[in-house]
Structures are given as C-alpha cells and as structure tokens.
Length: 231
Image (cartoon, rainbow, N blue to C red):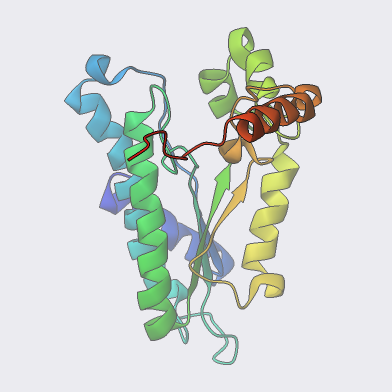
C-alpha cells in the first residue's frame, strides 16, 4: 500500500487486526530520500518526501488509534494502551548538505511524535517514541545516501569509526516497545554512534599542548586587554 493514502493506511491496519486479533505496536518506517541540491529539487519532489514521511506517519497513526488505545478491541483492559515508534533521522538537528527535503520531513515526524505522546498518552495511554538512526549497513538508505564513493570519507567523521547494524535499530525498537521502556514517551532516541555530534578535528591531539603553551607564553608577554594610552 501507499502510506500517503488514508484508505491504504486503514486497509493495512484492519488486515493486521483481523489476522492477529489485536494491535500492540505500530512502527512507521516508510521514507523517501535522495541527494539533491536545494535549487535542483522541484517543489513536487519536496512535497513527495514530506507526504511519504510526515503525512504517511500521521495517516498510519490515525488509522491505528482505535486499536492501540486503552480498552480497544482485543486489548486487555488492564494492559493499557499500545506503543508507536516513528523512524526519524538527525539531519535536521543542525543542517545537512543536499537534504533539505528530508530534513523538513523528519522535523515534522519528530514534532508529530512529541505531540501525539502528549495528547494520546494523556487521553488513551499510548506511548509514542521515535528512533533516529545513523548510517546503517545493508539498507537502501545507506546505498542511496552513502554510496561506496563517499563511504570511507564518512567513516572518518564518525566517533566510533563504523556504520551501524540493523540489529542496533532493532534493539532500540525492542527497548522502546517493551516493558523496559514503559515509562518512556515523547523521546526520539538517536542511534548513530555519535555521528550527528561530530565535526572535523582541525588540530591534531598531539599539537594541542604545544599550541596551548605557545599561546599562553605570548599572552603573558603581552597581556591582552590592557590599555596602551597614557590617558
């Protein structure tokens, strides 16, 4: 189905309920992505990514609400509501080259996560969280956004010097959806090996002490900020 279409979202939710007799967890992972400079990106391309990521996420949440809320058909009245996990990204935390469309879409996904955690947590006892993966090996996103030509260069800026595994994201989802995360809601968990925090090291570690001593020596020889005028 197409998550952009409300009828498709309703159909897959109903089919899931009919098959399993209940709905405990909804994971929204549909996404559209590609590299494009802002001036080369058409308004239609921009809109399409927002429709898939942001509108699609809301469509699925909206369709699943009646089966996820506390006391819903198939749910034990003592078990509370279900759980929603929205797959996001870290691209919009600062800014990302050639990813304006996805940055906008994932910012909307994160806002949806927080707002539904507030509203549906209060009204329906549903926990809503997100996961923001970094580069994950063996995924379509990795092959599209970090092709072989730039993968080695990307690793240089990763604090852990490696890409993640699908298992890493699976374990994050398991934590958030199980009793281990029963008191966690409104969180978007970053699972990227610290990548979004990284920046180039402009000075080798070995040179830090030497430079620091030189700067300190100059500052003592000529204190900064002292007036030079006799007046």
